[in-house]
Image (cartoon, rainbow, N blue to C red; front, side, top):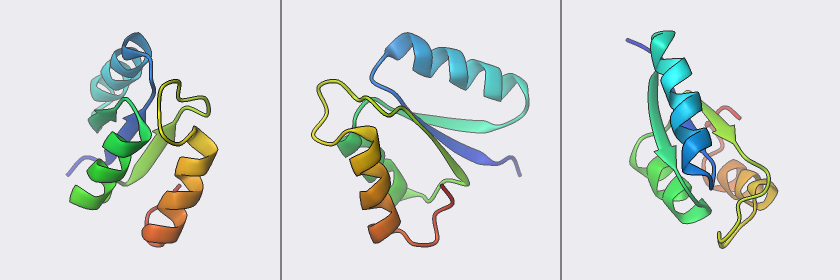
Length: 79
């Protein structure tokens, strides 16, 4: 079973580029464009890793706030 990586970035081109590279290397990837999508994705299925943009334009939380929130709500999630 491949590792599941959640890619969080507000720029679609970057999400797709990173996801494509990781998929080529055999990883399963999911993407989120903002903090709300990321929190829902983590709640739905805990990823093995989160690839997180620090500046999430147009998002309720920036990347650092999202990181803190995930750490509090999902203590077993590797970051």
